[in-house]
Image (cartoon, rainbow, N blue to C red; front, side, top):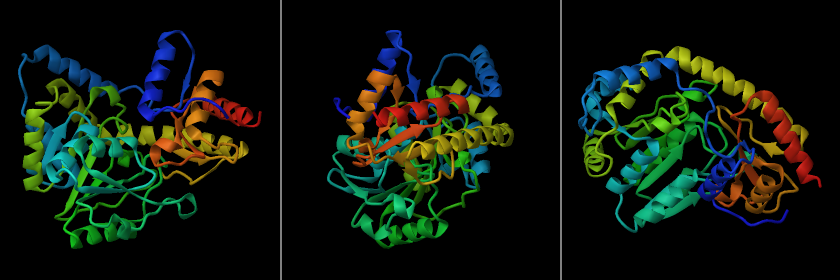
Length: 359
């Protein structure tokens, strides 16, 4: 396929621009859940707005939300730091734990924001090789002399979950090297089976309300960290975002109060969507690891030679947006599909992609 290649975020902006110009696009490229924010969250936010005066909130987060999260995570509230989305917190963690020239390791494929953040902070990104045949499992020894080992679990872009033995081994290996392990658990609540609890003196966990509670645009996340790291993160918030809007945090409290019901419904939707996408992809000749969670499938096809050029050509000619695998660690024959559409739409779009590949 011919066409000009484009980066992950540039492609996302191009899709939005095309939609503003009136072009219909089936958006399978960005991790937008396409599920409404729970009504309880909206109501709680509106109520807070109506009764609240303008003013700053605590940089660590509202005490009520920190306590609610502490109960959820089985930790002390002093270990909880609220931020405007998990991306902000991950950037902050790398900022406070690393100095220019330090190495940050993460398994490949990886979320593009990891390497981009390293670039902005002057850090050395060490992508640890993995492959489809091993269901994307990595070797902890490949972290070398990294200051931080960053693990996304469930993994974006594959939606696979790493084995418990592998994660615990990686935490131990990092501890032996004096390194921190940062677990990016933005998709934890969407896993189809329960994920074990991981902890340790060198472990920091980051979670998000964006995918679990369909609050992408609200920008709300949190970190669970040792007290010394938590204090540094609070200071990072103070000189950057200052605080998360209190009404947004109030919405987060409402979600946690109704967590079981909300997540059960979300997982049901993602399983149906994922099953439909997998069937359609297999019928179109794609290979992929079976997802263990919502919301992506990372798939390869023999007819794809340059996924960046392919994604642009598919967008321009068919009006379907997918994320090129090149952006997740140089996977030129892979594309990431966000299964964020009704099952029928997914089947039709993936079938259209398959026919496009065969032209």
